Each structure stands twice: as structure tokens, then as C-alpha cells.
Length: 247
Image (cartoon, rainbow, N blue to C red):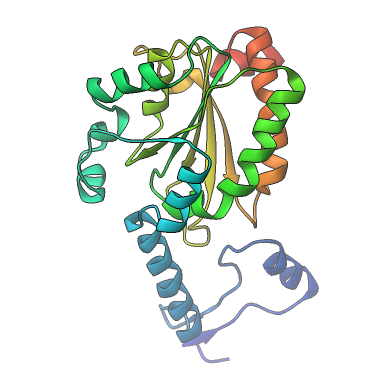
């Protein structure tokens, strides 16, 4: 075989591995570079990831939000570019918005559901309609009270803590678009924070990640999130403390 063209030896184990993951395994090379087809697929996946980061909520999604009578607000970021260039702006909304939410939303309940575009609004587009009914129905069955979901444009994880704290909620649940990988532009995460406040740090949060069609299915993730929320409310802890309670 030419030293300029190197392919892994084909066998059943390699074929099974390729079927089990979207990762680039056993693609071979041409000299020091990937082959043409592998390179083109990489460029395609990279473009999809970039599009996911640049994307914003579609009119279809916003129509669904209006139909469901969800609250729709925006962080201190003025645009998607502003949100990407200055991350702290996506962590908070302004005082006027908080004042409005306090006047229109229920407070002092168990859970506040916050839905953020994050770094992939596509993840919300792809998964929200499946995961949210499962969560809401599950909360009803478990006797867990919650406020009307709040949808946040240009939102990062911490904005759910700010909003939930302002409304006096015991648990913040943030459904947010993940930073896209080269094979998962539409992956969602769920962050759960007990007793959210301005002092909340990353280790206070429990996360369920990789919610998408090729990962944890949104319906399955919704059922898991309900049980996780129930456990957090019972033990009155989340994040590292919750993990330590298992060990």
C-alpha cells in the first residue's frame, strides 16, 4: 500500500464502532491529510455547528411560545453577536424585566422553568415540544408546583438563577441549547439549581446533558428530570452536594 494512502484494516469490530458513534473513527488518511470525503463531511459538520451558534428562535418557535402563553424576555445582550462577544450579558436580564415578571408570574413555588437559546437555538427548536410536556405532566403527577415557563433570548445558564431567585422559587430548571459539537448541532442540556441566588456557582448545579435524537431522547430526559427535581427538592441540595450524597 502506498505511504500516501493509508486506510485502517476493515473488520466487524470497526464496522460496529462506526455504527455506534457519530465520531470520526477509522477514516484513514491521504498522506498527512484526511481523505476528500472525510474532509468534506468535516466541513459540512463545522458549518452546521456554526449555523447553530448563529441561529435565533424561529417564528415557528415564537408562535408556539405565544400559543402556550409563556413569558418571553431578553437578557442584557442586545443581539446574538453581543451575546457571543460579551458572555456576562447573557447571564442577567435588567431590573425592569424582573419587575415585570414579578407582577405577571407566580412566585414562591417549587420550580421555575426557564428556556434559553444559549449557543444553539436549534436545540430548543428540535427538543422543546417533546421534553416540556413530559416535564410539566411529571411535575403534576409528583405534586411539584411550578410557574409559567419563561423563554429567554440570548440567555446563558445563570440567568435562570437570577429569574428564579427574583420569583422566590426553590428550584431553577434551565433548558438550554448546548455549545454545538461537530456531530450534534441540536443538543440541549438541563441545569437544575436548588435555592438559586446571586451567590450560585457552577458546582451548585446538577446537569443533564446531550438531550437530542442521537443522545438521550427528549421524552426520556424529561422523565429523568422530573425524578431528579423531586430528589433535589426532598434533599434540599443540588450540584456537587447532591452527587456526594449518593457516595
